[in-house]
Amino acid sequence: MTGATHLSSEVAPGIYAISVPIPYPFKYVNCYLLLPSPSSTDGPVLVDCALDTAEARSSLGAALHEHGLGYGDLEHLVVTHHHPDHYGLAGLIEPHGPRVWLLDVEKERGHVFWTQPQRMSQAGQTLFYQHGITDEYLRDLGQEMTKTRSRVHPAQNLHTFTDEQLLRLAGQEYLVVWTPGHADGHAMLLRESDGVLLAGDQILERISPNIGIWAYSYPNPLQHYFKSLEKTARLGASVALPGHYRPIKDIAGRVAELKAHHLERLEFLLHLMNNRTQTCWQLSLGLFPGSLNLAQRRFAWSETLAHLEYLVAEGAVKRLELNGIIHYSR
Ligand SMILES: [Zn+2]
Image 1 (cartoon, rainbow, N blue to C red):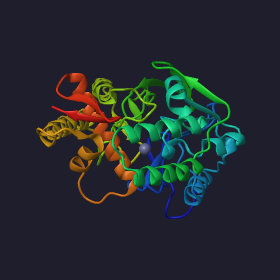
Image 2: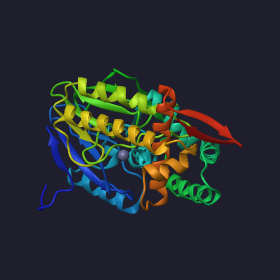
Image 3: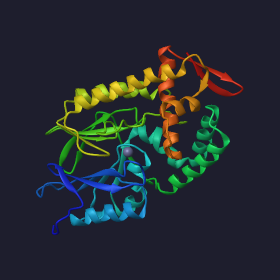
């Protein structure tokens, strides 16, 4: 390899992080290239791929090229979850040869979002409407989703693994760790030999991963996420390599911060509810004030809904329907 700037950096032995630009606030997604030792008969593996933009294609392609690789040299493409920034290019990479893998739960519960667009769009619009999102937003949200869909190419022949399965990737054993919350079938991969954890979006350094309810997700994802956080801390991994931002060494510390963050948000939400009956949309404007773009508003709404439904399940909040619109009160 020559030149001063490298398009990837070795973040753990044999694991290279490739920062690929994405048109989202966190700006980059980390794709991880796992390289086998020269004596291994296994091929290189890519964990996660960005969504389809011209910048992402050229940046990922160039980073692989620096290692003397093309998509056709990859043995596997393993995807932590179905979200566009981790999965979008899968269907374009697959025809070059690598097998594309997802957790079985994610194939059933997440991947269908891309393969059944009509059914999913309809269910999404119905859910937005039921929760008090205005017509103007509904139309714009529909258009925004059409744009996102154009950037995601589902794999045609998806392979699945299961929770707690041992996968042999680039000559090393990785344990599959199912961590529902951010996505129902979100999976992490723990390298058995040294505790390196490919963490997807389970824990991130600077932001709290979105925990939201969508038309196709579990009814109480925040409850799942709390359990998944504990599971993550219990693994005792040496370092987490996340889907965005830098590696995390103090995993237990970050888990505690994220848990505290959600507990604080639940308290604040209860405070915002006061004695008024409100829709999730109204409450999301209070929980996430300030000017957010459309996509961010959508995430704010879905995160508020996850918190509200958590409180409903805990018995702290009541859900009621008024003229076909769902409202919440204490
Ligand atoms: Zn992500």
